[in-house]
Image (spheres, rainbow, N blue to C red):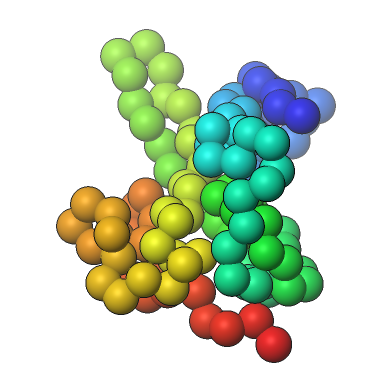
Amino acid sequence: MASYMDSGFNGLPNVLASDVAVLSHEIGEWINNPLLVNFVPPWGRFGIQTICGNNLEVGDPLSDSIFPVATPTFTYHVQELAYFSWFARNVPSLAINGRYSMESTFVSPAPPCL
């Protein structure tokens, strides 16, 4: 499922579902786990993931973290995604500059999900 919504669709200025926010979430997850067979250590209780799970769902833990990407004619709203090292609990992160997410909202690996 993905969408594109014009600003103020249905009178709701909800940035969490504006323009490409949902689309960027779903494309990120599709690229990282297209067949839903990529598993990671259990994680949960972040974003829309309310229970422990072991699927690599790079958009779910940061579903409420949206950042602007400006072009000369439009500002898109893209969802931040978690990197593999956050799920795998790599220390340090294997990602560029030791990051655990695109905008560095996560500064350490996922805590154990009990």
